[in-house]
Length: 404
Image (cartoon, rainbow, N blue to C red; front, side, top):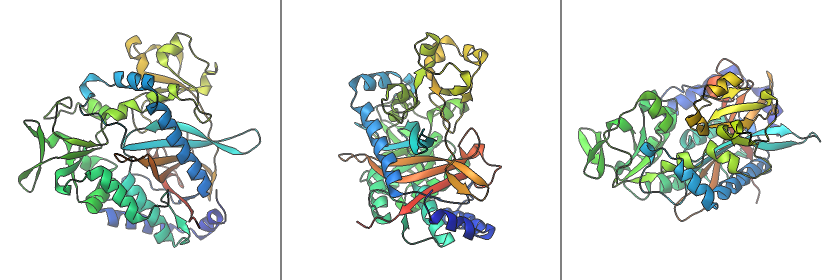
């Protein structure tokens, strides 16, 4: 979007440079990147990213400042995933936006979704920096928000993830982490923070404490940076050696309850020009909806799923009726928004979905830290849905360095 950076990159791009980017990322993470990395970063005016970041804070505060919403969202947590030791606020937030064209031809952001769950903070910083280094881009470009440096960015992440504990007593937990596509991200935390990545099913409980095994020793866990997603554990039938509801002597960096509390569940409760209309499926069946009547202008979303799983565009009457009455509160009917292609590539204009990643330290404020971009041309923006195309996939948001 931002010139002259956009045209200059397209003109200077080479396949050899892209291969070097992939090699550099694999070398620095120590693993092959298992998802599609886009050929290009995205160049934005700083005020565009700052505007998105400010909207994300406003939307999150709308929810947290509403006692009625907090009660609804707490009641929505499944009993088996109702973890003790609630935190006052989420430690991590992600807010996704696309761009739509207004009647006057200008662009405005529209919310895709928001989620109180950690995204790929480690890998994303590496990717952003690597675009600049590998392709020899202008030194005037940066990727960290809020006038942060690489050092202060990792101090902030360390403050929230480690919580003042020895890194040996802090673990990143995931289901079968070596098989996850986010493994490169895990490797960055291991390198930068010195923490271990552990399969959550391999933890051991003794009394109220949890332990993990390393080098033949069972090491006590004081804090968990949780990356295990509830819907994946349900889908895989994951069995743990402890009950998440136990009164455990452990801290959470990113308390698991927030995954349910701020999610697609939040959309019907938000009031902002950037938020598309949304209603729970049971209310839609009851006729309590001002959604468009044309079914092709509506989509169906399960509340708790990642990477676009379960989304149906223009759902049919049969598909909607097949959802049991007792489960309809777990789905949204949402106004479908047509996002405008805004990134010019050698293969044509491409849609961009921008995710702003936030960190919220205890005793601090919600801080936008970095932008993640996904480029795509199909109905779905996730990298899994664009793997067989060029100039799509995971990318980064770069913007000119502030002179202030």
